[in-house]
Length: 246
Image (cartoon, rainbow, N blue to C red; front, side, top):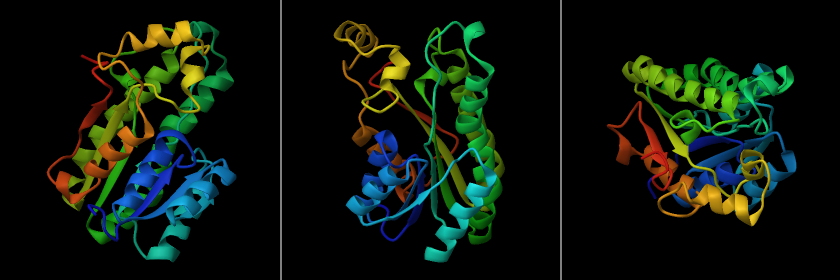
């Protein structure tokens, strides 16, 4: 019960890695607010783990204000924030990605972290403690061709994590990231371009441990980094990737 009675917000918690993180937090004793643009999915995960849910678009500041207000009304504090919600563009030469797709990727993957800092960090500062986890990607460490602007957004998130960690350390707030390799999530087909046995085999050949990441992998890593067991760890971007970035 590493997170006994902690309060946690998990964005993108209705599916994939976010759902795995929400489930792990609940198993470890946390009270979890599952936030997702897909309201029914958030509701389903929340019902499964005995948590709460809220439909939000993380690219919008007003939605973040609603998320903060809901959490504070429920618990009076926010101990843990997981910025997991993310999107990608389809694989394409960088010059062929549309401006709309570029704007959407940066709004969801990067601007959402800006909004979270503006709305959630003041509450953590007032409490004198907190843990923030940003879900980045191996794409921000070892970029793959034809996913240029997605790669860039995740590299941005890794740098933002380190900058946040340095600035917020005096306030008792730790900030870390995890870098998953692709996994069995709704984004997998988008990353690969197409989902066929041949494409999967080529992708898996780049992962030394020979399998995709799972929501459970992310949940265990997140629970550790957001618990007191990682009390001396901040500014880390932990690769949970089966050796992909070696």
